[in-house]
Amino acid sequence: MRLLACFVIATGLAAADTVTLRADHYPPFNGDPKSDRPGLIIEVATAVFTKSGITVDYQVMPWTRTIDEVTAGRIDGAVGAEPEGTPDLAFPAEASAYWQPIFATPADSTWTYSGPDSLKGLAVGVVQDYDYGKDPQGHSYSEWFAANPQKVQSLKGDKPIELATGLLARKRIDLFIEDWSVIQASAAAAKVDPAAIRNAGTSGEGYPLFIGFSPTDRGRTLAKTLGDGIAAMRADGSLAPILARYGVTDWKR
Image 1 (cartoon, helix red, strand yellow):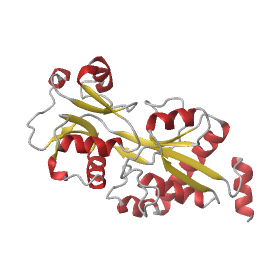
Image 2 (tube, rainbow, N blue to C red; image 1 turned 30 degrees about the vertical axis):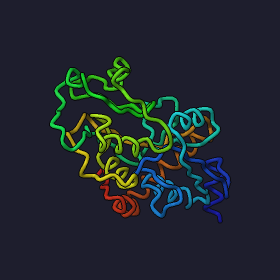
Image 3 (tube, one colour; image 1 turned 120 degrees about the vertical axis):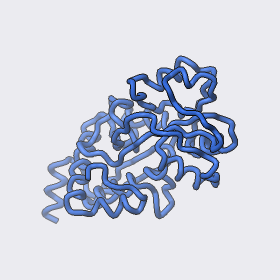
């Protein structure tokens, strides 16, 4: 009890508090809240906060609404955020996962990326308010998508990646950028044959994924708590088994 009391005083969080986390369906990072495999980011966060007597309330919510609610402080954290795309949020010192984007096409496509001009003529699926990073020459995919809206299909809702995998498999879109593990997990969840989708190569550099917290004193405290907890889990070996459940290895090892 003494250790817990010290923690509460130091962080300003109360025992039996609840941290609210939201995001759209994004397995293997975060998935069905009712599943015994709710996602590796959710399991890591739950392990950290439970040790401090704090309950995790995780639910699925469209991404744009999630960011609005977290930024306004009505929800604590956006799962799978990254600092460049959501600079107003408070971030832990340690990431919760790592995202490596690839080009996904229908299985019979022979297309390969050779610069922004090679995107011309393609029907591209993008999730509203997602950031797709840059190509190896530093060209922003998101900027190209914004400049060419006539060829871009904006995907919304709670499960936009499952929607994208279905569109790829049915050849309703020609291209989608996403982490391959996310494509595979979403295809399985949507009962889409993964063999109908092709990995057409890495689209650019990956980056760490975080839970981005509200830009408030409470949010910054939660961010520090999670960051310190992830570092402790990595040090004591308890992080690796959670990652392994989802077929992921530690990006820092």
